[in-house]
Image (cartoon, rainbow, N blue to C red):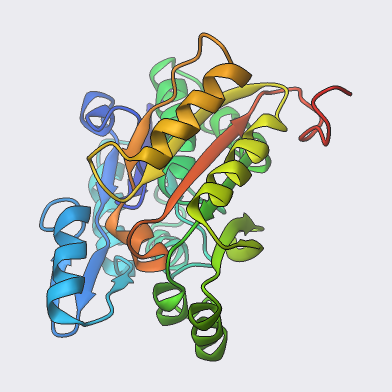
Length: 294
């Protein structure tokens, strides 16, 4: 049986940053643009450098997807060995990466088996899907089995963030400029979620303490969790993260939750000093519980 190779993009984040190297995952980089300057994500710019440039230049950054030609080159190289390919990418609602990946695969139709999947997610949500696919491929599972299992995981991914500024979300085209200005005037800290692959406002709070409480409430609604990542904008521990971990330790005793720095691509939407959680709900659970005691 031909080996299945896994391809993803640099917006994917992993609990172990070395996972792609250890498990032979091909990562195609997005490009972060600051005006006329551009940097390949993860190799030429980190999140810390991203925010330093944003503060120094005063230029709002944007993330550009790999081209269809770049994907076609990757797929052609993999197909020379006769391998099947599963290509998993950040939500098509957020940029063109999925569409370009699909276009890049079109030229190889009939010569190689390539399945391009829209994760409807980003960051560690996408990373969890990639990890599951790569491990299944190592076990020798067939392409059809891996695709089926990944598609079953996608509806079990949930995301909530709170942000300090709406400017980045406005610049990325997810909200209007007037809404961003009004939010700043009112001192609102929006809580965001991903709905069908798009980043949308969920609730508004006025303090970071209230925002952390919302994250705790969100996670506590799950009766079982297969994976969870806390994402923040800095490598340094924060008081918000400490409080969130303390509350999660009470709700889920004995579990350790990784704290990751969110990627430059995600930073183009969230801006600085944001914080959030991505959850993979336990398999077989019937949605989030509205009341933990039920």
